[in-house]
Image (cartoon, rainbow, N blue to C red; front, side, top):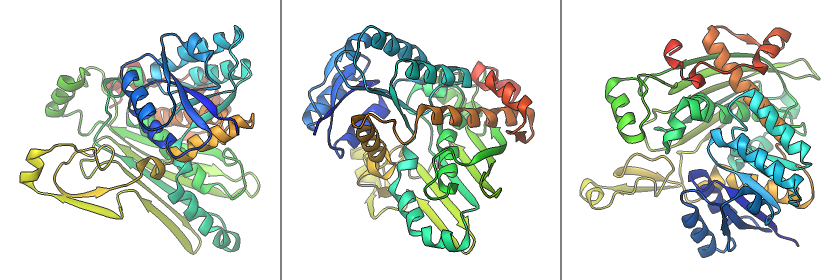
Length: 412
């Protein structure tokens, strides 16, 4: 069977995580990497782990001429320009089948629409990488509950929480370059997975119709003088001038278009979870049944005492976003699979080799951008947003949050 030659544009944290996931996926190889920081390190990892012998290219056009598919894994503020260059390369003869984009598709709805237009204009298949929808812990639980859902009715509420102590990179903390704060970074995960859990079996990802959005955001930890100082010294980002939210919580309502049933997703996302590390927590409630997932419930544990911790400090060796090197620590032996990265790559590879879009298209990514921006609008206007109202839909088309414009002091 043919192998899909993939080129990575981006070689930072998410690219390295996806490379780990690729070790568990057949019929693909990492053929090319765009020249950015850490590109050589990523290439060496690929060679060592049998993922391919990637060449490092200094232009997107050159990379595009040597791959079957491209994964855009670069910082949010670079993606639209990169997609324009990919589209230009295709127009000039690059023979690419599909293009992948890591969440979020773009920082605004306007930019997300342009991403879709460029991909479709270049006749490219698309895959939007929202890893949580491919988590086996969630999908296996849903599958186990299908008989109960058929007998009792669908889930009526889903809850999703994603929390950790904060991003790895300076641009992620910068609301202008990132497009917001914790809601833009992680809220897109939570909104998407709530919708996924609530969607009836066999229905497409966008089956449920968004009805309303209610969201509140705060700057709780990283707005305090002590932590603002830490943030500025480590990343050069000044939250006294251009703050972003480190906490967001809200409720989104959906309507089943076939039955009229209203269901709700409740989400909470934060950058101030100073416990074991990254925690993904989801649960769903239906009539007479329930499901629950918590990624910090591990089958393995280790203990490191004070003396041993002073000898070796490698906090993320056992768990992503871990901030502790001692005490009782949870271990997840296969985080790439646990969080759904393996599943999303497998789906994209299989789909592109079959000349089809991925399970989640860029049009779906555009929808998620719209829902995230509705959350920012709800916070700014301090009210529940009616997502069915024509005037709200028109307003969202060109909306850009104050936080993403560097005016967060007005609303936080």
